[in-house]
Image 1 (cartoon, helix red, strand yellow):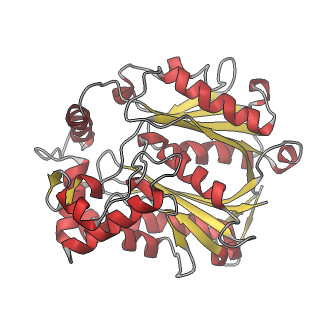
Image 2 (spheres, rainbow, N blue to C red):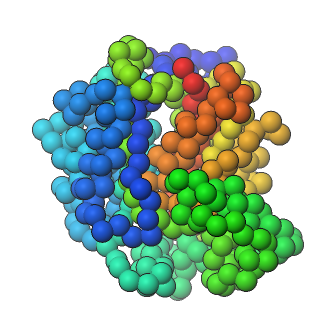
Length: 373
């Protein structure tokens, strides 16, 4: 199912995305996890004319500590089409769930698979209360045996990088406002109003130099992606997008310092893998969704992803318009699929996602390359 490229990379047999859907996104959903998963998966299957019986594999991305239960896949498994079927759960970003499902299809193990990410932390109340809960989870994610810095959270890590890389604070604010304004008014955005750079600077201070509007727009919801082999995709209705390359990489520990001095290197390794599989198509990428948690990371990620000046970056507004936690990888893919062909018909697109639990430390990155079939 794969061939070697002259450069030494490995080309994979294209995996087709035949269906995709999401729930509405909200600051907090009243629905249970399984209700959100069922809504997204059933809508994605309807889009491509398939049923639960057609699924050979279901992969769910969620996290027990956020879901408020142990073995949370016991609740979501049936809703994801995994009852009496092959299924598993990954405790990480849904981009990794998509890669796992795609690998099963590329290997010939199954013809149809679904990957779904769901995020609705078991906490209610004020924004400050939810933020405190996520910060506590983040702190616990740092290495518990050798290196758990006091007070360290993913947000603190991003703030330290932004402070070290700081040029002009006004430039960070202008970049954040540009992201928010591109997404303002779009259906999936949770920041619906246009803002100015001054509005960004006047928003709530989180950790110097970061303000609330410089950080992702936290939301909850679920996103499902249905993948199929080329032969099966030819018999499906709905969308037909080819996934031609995928890469995954994980960063190092706190003490190696790379997270501060070269935070783009984990993204570069994941991109090198995905672009080697995509082959010559890498030169045709004109659209990308890049998961830059702060504006200070945007240029470094864009360079690491090998994107050139022709590429349109984050037409959705990116994370500053909507960040649904572990469902982000699937949302970024959905955003590029909805726009592929609009910028330059016949060209390719790229989606990039990260798990932000420990910030730039041990960063978990996925990169997907797609083209319209």
